[in-house]
Length: 321
Image (tube, rainbow, N blue to C red; front, side):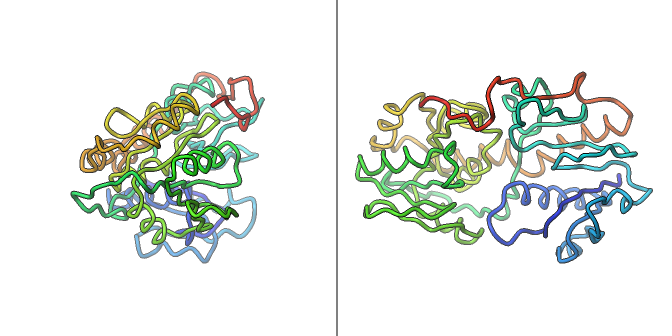
């Protein structure tokens, strides 16, 4: 199969990136399976070493750069125009009110799809080779990690800080600068992959009490890959990702306080790592996309109607907690 991806930046990304890493890992895995993979992107992208053919992007209208031999185009950003060849769109975020997507659109969790009047989804996966795990790691429940865009209110850093200060627990914040005089809050700004792994190994659990319908939450499976449990809210994909033995779903602030304050030793890091290996590897993700590729190439539509946000609220509306 000949598959083309398009990205308007440079791959691989040097700093922390979500969608960018997903695209990069997926392309590499498809090449390993024997498929021919093309990438239209910034000419500074360094992908040839993995067998990916780079097509330098020269203008906003990149359609004319698509080789005629391509079987399918896999997009991760909506376009303002139609393509003349089979294509599939993956939506990683929440659509705006009234925004419609093509029928061949796939979402990243079951709830994410439902929120857009669709049944089609593929869970994100990570390249576990980039998340080496050390067996037998013990946790003390003293150091917690916040790994998200700190300035984005829906990610709820405010409650993470409040709860950790209240319980004299240390909170390590990666994803933006936080200015506080508290000796319990440690801010690192934006971090790269190396620094992120250091923080994951130094902390005992990930705090993820989002106040919106989180489409997926890549940080969740990144933390679990290192054996960390995740304490999250009940919104979006979180109940699908945080299962018994891998973390705690808190329905409100009081439950969040209790979860952080408890000297929690019931989680087994080895089991959490195995959970990610079995459900959220890049190989599992590629397997699922291959099924959709085959369907689209055969001329079938993934969705009966155009998917659109049906939650009734703007995507960044703060949900109660």
